[in-house]
Length: 149
Image (cartoon, rainbow, N blue to C red; front, side, top):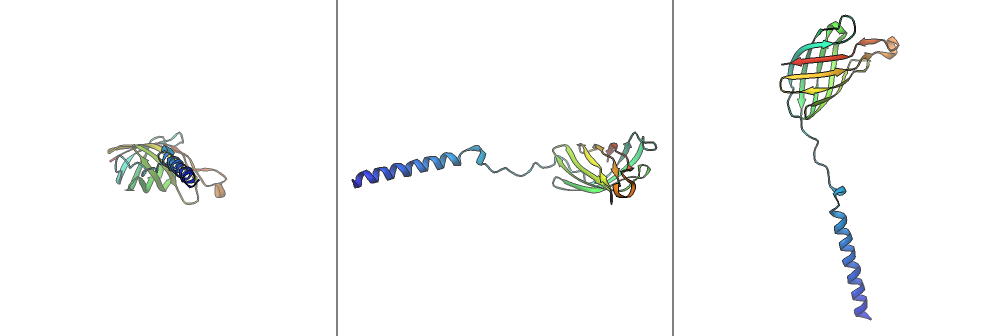
């Protein structure tokens, strides 16, 4: 009887070890590595042109002064002719894709999507509005930017 209990106990332990080891090798239990790093560093001053369908902004000059830490990019973006006199970029770079927002105090909108390389930044930006002050009137129109170093 004692030998039979030892055999049953041994089989239960062996089964538990098999189940545990199978669960630990399942691919869904892996820990994801760090987010991909940016393929380029865009720190510095960039100049170029901002194009919008809005009057006075069809080909306005734009300047961006950017700082990059890892994949995070921040800095000022200015297009005085289009009402973006104190824009602030907050974005991330994943590979060559730029995603984020350009904002101004009290404004909403300004989504940014684009691409980057060592010598070129191109992005589209959504309209910026001041809903509480102007009733959703566009303060700075959205459009497309093309910048280079």
